[in-house]
Image (tube, rainbow, N blue to C red):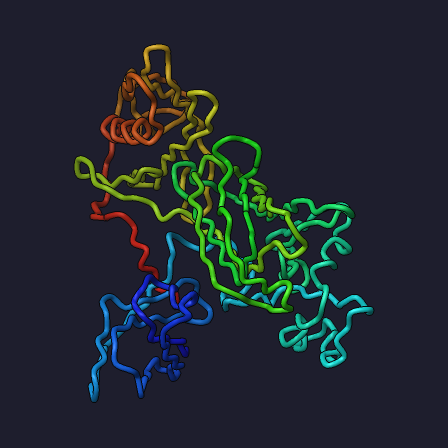
Length: 430
């Protein structure tokens, strides 16, 4: 896949976009990624690049010194796009443009006849010059007169259901904030993990974005982008301006099994042109953090116990009801179907002790005698797992609980594995 390469004055990744006083040298690689930049003026440069279809900016480490007659071989250059975990859903195409989204027909009073042949919503014209019409931003309020845009993952189509510009709402004598919703289902939630929401902008003009998760008014569920951009692409009938990339780390306990909603509010509303053109949106699942304890394999979210007959997975998850955590176990049978077998409770008592109440089978805790295979379903036990005086830290408590739980379980065999923190170096081609 061809890359776009820019030899520009030194700066941060992507800073070439705002440089206007020095020389830049551009080239597009061939399909194999090879390129040559010729006739470069003497000076110090950074090599920047980006790949259509992937988010993020590449910048080669170190300056490149160009002198008269030099011939520099840069060798292999590797771009690792930003990623923290697997894609749960995505909206759009990461090409630094909003052209793939819904571009409405213009008001008949404003039609530019030069592009009148491209005012149909049929393919492929919608991906060409439909945006080159005046007043398209006004169509948002006309198309959504009573309720802002709601996009449902798995149901909606960004080509028809995602307006090309997130602008303010025209209320007659004033402009009002507009809140778009992205509703998405989750069959399972890693309550101890961290989810990553990535927002790539194709353009921004005096925008101020607020992002909320499920309950957008609750403290700890709101994220802010801050005042961003002044490229005026919306008013100038453009489809892209300067590229921006933001990410937000969403704690797993803010999500629920079932339907979740992310609220994206364009809160600054000083003019009809205040807003954002999105390039691409993506939600990534947790990557996980693995470590070894006492020869057994644990993770901060999952403890896997292997017996002679079945595989048990003990999940600690936060339900965040004061100081109450729930703990669930599942059995994996030979057909890869998960069957819930018990629902223990992990709670904090008045002495700051974490207690686990097991109401299930195939586990051995304090007060239960016999090996793993001899514990009968319905046996109950309460065992003290950890003590955490003073201020509570959920991560520390759960990690301690997992360690104690591992020591108290009668494990017949657990495969050893050495893991580290999951890397951001994800092979995007896989």
